[in-house]
Image 1 (spheres, one colour):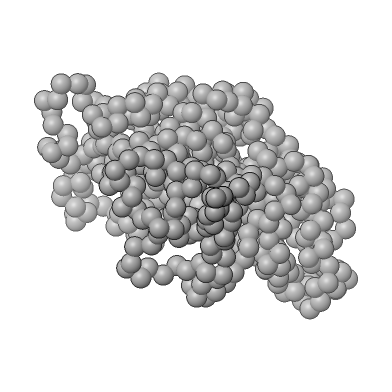
Image 2 (image 1 turned 30 degrees about the vertical axis):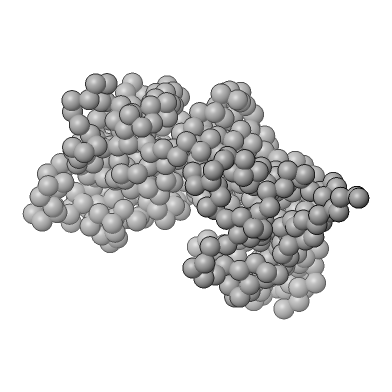
Length: 531
């Protein structure tokens, strides 16, 4: 008697699909996930076979997603409105009903979560400063998640703690400092907060124990185009947003040192204490670089802490060709840098660096004796947890360390220079394409800001009416982009300038054809707009 072939089930975005055992798309090592639960996996299951089969299925899902992320024929996103996702789509539900689901459903959930998300590694995703999908740092992220350790003491993360020390010391040479301290933390916003805390602790260490009462009012300064996170510490630390002063910028978007000095003097006349200045290396919208040397001269004159927010633009330190953009960075007291932006390390990877050794620990330590015992048998200076405002801290350093090992200085340099060259190509393309206009001429970095004028408004003579209509164009085109899923580019106003597109190039997968496609797609999506 012939053995009857058993039907099996495979997960898909629309539910379970019945397949035969000899189907090429189905693994013969079937885990029978439909009738399995998390209780069958390690450490609860009796063997590791089920766990291996389950993780192989997960890995297959990830590999297919990665392939689609680099496939220009695939959509960047399958857009649905929030209410549609909350209500459920094709069997995909976000609800937690309290019951344990089968492993088959868990696999379906993983596929659908990726299906309805945004492929930020796609070569035509230009929406954010962080984009791309670097395979080496992705692998590093998988390794650190598997290790599942914490970055507060050497005893539980010996290799990762030492890697962090190695990377920080390497950055000392790149910046040009003689001493350095630093920490990896969850993003540039947190690192900018750290820098303000350090600056205040340096001039008013007693605030840590006594509080703000009785101390003079502090004042901090930043460019009016600086990232909003540079103001947030004023609200968090009790300095007050009214004491966070915007400095005017010139026609290139650079902070004006003369306006900075004027406002420092005014704050002193008001009886306040100017203590902190942020210079931005690569502003979020324009990609402008403040002149650090001139700003540092003002700060030195008035004994003020100088922080460089290089979260976006710090990558130019890797390129001799573009290093001049951060000339004088060695004169700063602290620097924020996000490798998860221009050098392409996967999210998140961000560090705060300072030339003031041991100030991080003095500012933040709490001396918890259940973690930071002073009589351990190893060098306790590697117990870095007391330098941070966190206790638990994710391992972010390994992504950068492994990428650096894989690519070397030349690899990072090539990435930065290629992205900037692609931006220059886009500028040339815009200048010669009818209907397009640069918002800012000759950008310094890989941010390219431009308007698209549909034919219906190109010949309007009244500039007020024309600008009013122009401000509505980018949101309409962006909505059409997202509905089609073909491309993603951000837009925003800036001061008196109405909504414009901001294309950011930081993805190593982007090529010249993608730039051509972007310009053509905007024209196709916006040509028929009639207001």
